[in-house]
Image (tube, rainbow, N blue to C red; front, side):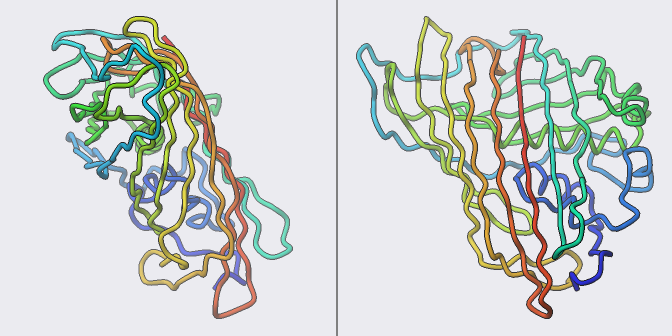
Length: 313
């Protein structure tokens, strides 16, 4: 019950990290008074232990709201197999949790900066990680073996990410593996796809995607094409998440929490080059608050969250 500070611990870190990426603060609920630091997660088993793991991504659907001004054209990635791109992904995830009137506690995960080289293939891109860094000293040390690790993304014709492939270097400690999973999940669910129709500057379309975790969410991303210069697109994004259920089933059949309040929304701007597989610039910030009630008691769990995903060449 939530009247105890020792909340249920999630057994499968991969699922835990997916929930983080989706905006659910499962990480905070999974931690107890002895909250784990990055270096103390060595006993966990993230995805990708010793081999490549492919994670399917839920289907996304785009719907045109306004086609924008002439001239218009159908937007599609045009990068050819063998195209190479160097880009840096930066992620931050801040979370604060409070149970009833107890003092708030910070369960934020350390920021991560991931330089990578992308090599385009047929229907996707292979990623080779450079020197991954974090301001957290323990995590930074754990990440020293992550350089040279492999990852990848599969795309639909409209640019939607359909699968995430992870293959950390075998010598990468579990803490670093888990942090990398977290960062890539955040990036995947802050991505965008293009509509089927021809569009011009000022065009608006929405992307609907179901994101699953302890609570299944409807995520709606609204995209506005604010500028086009040849293949380079500047797109403003707004993101809204809505729970599809009024309750949250806790892991390992440990109970159910009622969702009393849930607000997750954000915005940002991202720049694409249709001739390259990954964004070349931009930042998206999504944040809000969530309140859960234990129906067996009067306990309330409140969480405040801010997640940021940034790209730079």
